[in-house]
Image (tube, rainbow, N blue to C red; front, side, top):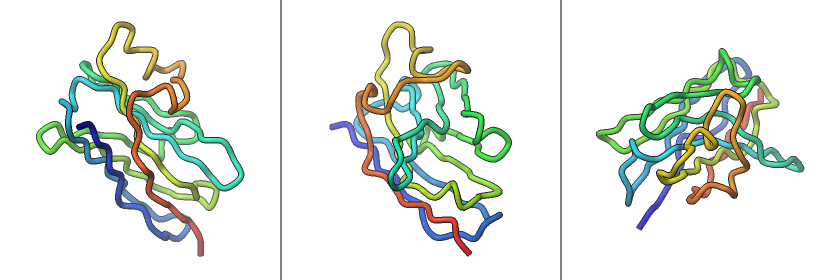
Length: 133
C-alpha cells in the first residue's frame, strides 16, 4: 500500500528555518517523482519543489529558488524540504505527492514546471507551516 506522510511543520518566526519530511512507503522511492505543493488559506494549491524519479534532478519554482532545498534519502525512503529565510507568505499547508514511473517523467518535474497535485498518483495529508512573529 502506497503511503506518503508529511511531518515537520510548525510555527516559526520570519527569517527562520524549517525542514519538512515526507515519509514514503509501499514503493521504491528512487523510481518515483516526488513533488511538494502548498496551499494557503483562500488560495489555490501551488507547486513548490520537485525531484524526478530516476535521475534525481530537482527543480524549484521561482519563490523557492535560493531559499528552499529538496533532497531525498533513498535508504530511509524519505524526502525533505529544507526551507530557509521563511516569510509570512510562506504560511500554508505543505503536501508531498508522488508520480509512478512512466514515459516522459519530465512532465512531472522539469524547469518549465509540473502539473497540479491531482495529476500525481499519490498525495499525503499535509503539514501546517505558520510563519509569524
